[in-house]
Length: 409
Image (cartoon, rainbow, N blue to C red; front, side, top):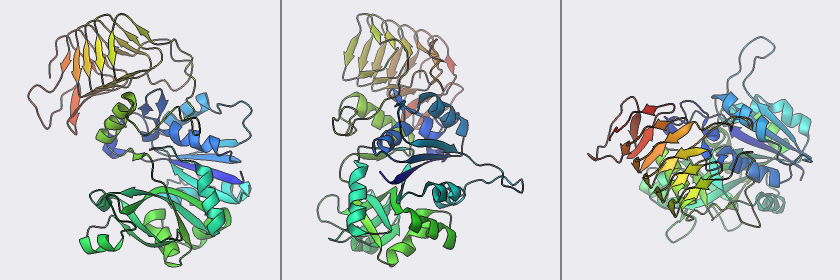
């Protein structure tokens, strides 16, 4: 396809801390993958001429992973480049101040690519979209820009950028996080339970139009600064995507997305024959069980589970070592999180015998000694100690923590 595809992967992920204390948000684990693998999978399947991944915060945690695992296809006919802030010719370090600013400061790559279209994706979203259909709508409308939008409820609308789309798929109005009820009423595109259309932050530009926009218009952010002016001109289309979409913004949204995937209730399908998710290889052993009871759960490669252990409605990430007679319910064990394919030679996440976990998120490189119990016995709302922190009602272990024998919370 005559397409350059840009993945924006530079955000700090402040609301996802402590998980983003040591890795960039797009590099956070998601089952056997990283969050960025979802966008990259869709990008690769769209057969672009070039993929540009723009990083900033803890860029090395993304770069090391990407260089070790991509391209998945050794015969890939696309160029893959990672772009991080660097010094200009005057020795000044160029940090990115927003989505538009990040692309503006790498504009030479777009000029050189000379593709008809440029698509911009986020590196921290979960979706199953067919990107070819977005291009088809763009060709039909002949618009300089098409924005992908997702139906949402009235309850969700005030925290999102809301677009109004007419019957011809043209966007006629836009408000960022509308709070006024009358304004919100005026933005309804449909009737029913999800009458509002939220911007997904996924854009398809004609490349010439994007270059012109970035060189003639000030502003650091697409949604806040640049796109509202284009909408006023009536030259922006809206592609309506009604299926699964999750913007991983908080610990709670990440935790719930992982558990939905583990229990088979997620709208994100890895095995969709029309839009499969490409999972990078790990080069590790299969999962191994010793008389364990597994119910509505996902167990990833390399994991070992001891006899008498029960796992219910949980996700056990790659290369997790779980001992005997443990009880794990509605919990996420991130597992081993190496940056390259040669670091799967050891277990860095260990849960020893007789541990009990409920509504817990065990971050990578964490060890729980025998008899640890994480269930929030006192039903606390806020809590933190050297080993754990309570976030959105979820017990989150701190990366690298070694929780001592018979520790109870």
